[in-house]
Length: 371
View 1 (cartoon, rainbow, N blue to C red):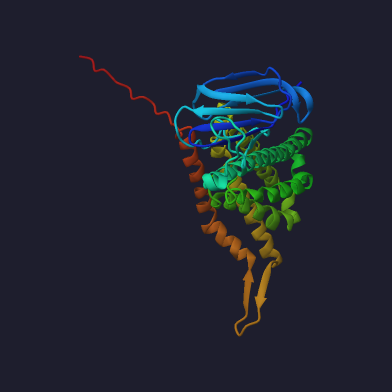
View 2 (cartoon, rainbow, N blue to C red):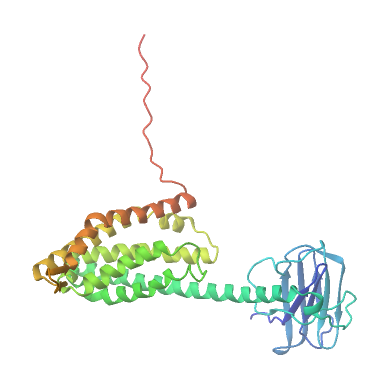
């Protein structure tokens, strides 16, 4: 059974922390105040009626236990806790995440002798209200961001794991005969997942993740181009074996990446997961680029044979624009720089996280000459 916590309202000035425990009819509470911690337990009437309530606060900085006092009234318990060093605290708690029962007392500001006089916060402390209000919103934004990213990463992991499971089951059952039906089996799911994945381009813009928008735009934009422009409009490509290898390669990267993001979100470092995240790309990225290049090349041949995706302009000089020519230019001068840019980015990230790729060199033999 979970322990109930009362609502606790807090405020501060340069020398004191003020706490108001919203609990009525408190009798003989168990209060333990230490240099960096406050523990409270008592029976009283709170948000859940008459019950046992308790909470624990790990202070951001040290407090003076001897000078701190508390006062029990019929409607609440007030604490006047003296800071060990004079100055404003950036937050009340050591951790950045604020529990739901802890609120900021914007209006009430008591004097040191714990009387019932109410200070005018806006007049006496003009910068305090804005500071505390921003912090309250900051806690809410942090909580929302963490919940959103947790659900997003979990959803994407489950989606790509579904693709991997379907492809593996089909291959174990039918072998290479399963290749022609790859796109029919998981193509719509891959298109849907990558459309949702386009949100990752906006995550840095809203401050949800660190980093820029360039690399997500290149990776996700390139995949959507292959999925929608190449595969979706060309049924002859959908039955080729290269589609199987492409989907397996993409999914292998993602079922490692999203669990790694979740571990970093909750600050749970996993050595094996970290190593896989910054090592699997060494094999997967080249395979993925080769598969994308094969698909674009084959689609270019189909377009030239069918004379499709061509636009003729009626000008004094008849001009025909062919999309196959754009694909040819991309294959000649675009795909290798794009691959180099992506792999260079991952290599720099790997060096920062786990160090550069080490290559063992054979030791030189020392040959002793006979005298």
